[in-house]
Length: 616
Image (cartoon, one colour):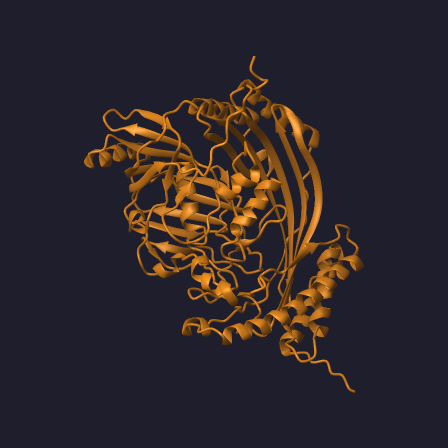
C-alpha cells in the first residue's frame, strides 16, 4: 500500500515562513525554537484516515515568574516565588467556514477548551517538544470527534439564516513580533518587610476582624506561534498591591473595603507614606461604617458616581459580555439547548448605529497609549495575544452612537474579523479575553467636576426629594470580598447567571446620602445600587475633567453562564492578576434616575462571640 503526504499551498507557505525566522531569535530562545519545530512537524504529519486534517494549529505558552507576599497585622501569612510555564494548544479541523468550536455537547464536553497544561520550565528542547506533541495529539483526536457531533447536532436544529452563513474562524495575515527578553531584579527581603510594616498598621484598629496586605509581581513572557506563520514573543509585567479589611456591624452585616494599585514596576507604586495614609483612612472609614445608618427605603432619583466609582461604572457596563465585546452563543446539543436563550447575554451589537450615550460622549480603544498625564498605563500593547496589530484608535462609540465591537478571531453576527483585541491575562490559571488595552472616554464639552454635586442636588430638588446619593468606590470585579464566614458559601451566594430582571451594579464600598437642603453628606450601609438601564445612560451628565485608572479584568468564560464558577475558584485560591486594562474616564458621572435599595442578603453571619485579642 502506498502512502502519500499531501502538503497544501498554505502549509508550504507556513514552512517557508518558519524557515526564514530570524536565526538569532531561535538560537537565543530554545522555547521558541521548540514550538516552531514541533508545529511544523504536526502541520505536515498529523492526520487520521477518513477524517478532517487540521487546517490550523496554534501554540500559546506563558512563561510566568511570580512573587506573592501576603501579611496580616504585621505577620507574613503567605510567601512564594514560582516559575511556571503553561501551554495552550489549539487544533482546528474542518475549515474556516465550520470548525469543531462553538459547540456544547450533551455530555458537557466543551469544544471551546483548548488543551491547557504545564510545560517544562527548563529550556530542555526535547522535553518541551514532547509535551507539545502529546497535547497536540490529544487536541486533534478530540477535535475530530467534536466536529462530527457538532455536524449531527446542527442537522437536528433549525438555525437562523444568519447563523448558518456565519463562519467559525476568521482569516488573518501572518505577522512576526519578537521583543527582547528581560527579567526585573527584586530584593525579596525588603519587599517582605514593606508588606509586614504596612499590614501592621491595621493592628491599631481592633474593630477590624480580618485584614490582608498583598503584593504580587507577575513577569510573563507570552509566546505564540501558529500554522499561518505568526510568531510572537512579548514580555509583560504586572505589579499589584492590595489592602483589604473587613468587619461586622452589630446586626451582623459584613462590611469591607479595599485599596488597589496596579503598576508596570515596583517603583511605580505609591510610596509607603502614601500607602500607609490610605490604609489608615480605609480603617477609620470602615470602623465608622459599623454604626452608620442603614438604607431602609427604596430610592429612585439622581445618583452621582465620582472618580474610581465612575471608572468602574464604565468597566461594568461596557467591558463585559453585555457591553462592547463581541460574543458568540454555541450550538448546544440535547436538553441544554432549551437553556441557550437564558445562557446568552446580549451585548451592544444590537445597538449599532443607535445612541447609548449623550451626543458629546465617545468611547475609543487606544492600545498604543503608554502614558496619560503622570500615570503609566498598564494596559497598553502594540500587538494582541493572537499576533494581530490593532488600529491606533478604534472607535466603539462615536457621538453617543455604537459604531463597532471589540473582537478576536471568532466571527459573530456583528464582527467578521479580529479587531486585534485578544488580550493575555497575567497570573496563574486565568483566562484570556477581549479587552481594549487602553479605553478612552472623550467628552466634547462636559461640566466642571466641582459643579457636579450642585447639579445632583438641583436634580433631586426638582423631583421633590429630600436627599440624593453619591457613590465614591465600587469593589473591582477582580477583587474578591474578604470572607468572614465560609469562603465558598459567600462566593456562591453572589453568583449571578445571565438573564432576567434588574441586577445590582456592584458592591458599593462607599455610598453617601446627601441632604438636598444643605448638602451635608452621611455615609450609609446595607444598600445596593442597581444597574442603570439604556435610557438612563443616554441622559447622563459627565465632567470635562478626566483621570486615568489602572485595573484588571476577568477573562471571558468559554461557556456562557459558567463564569461564576471560575470566579469562585479564583476567589478561594486567592489568585492575583488578570487582564491589564487602563481607562481614561470622566471624574464625575451623574445618572439622573437610578434605583438604590436595601441590600438583599441570602444570609447574615453572626458576629464573633468573644472580642478581638487586639482590644487593650
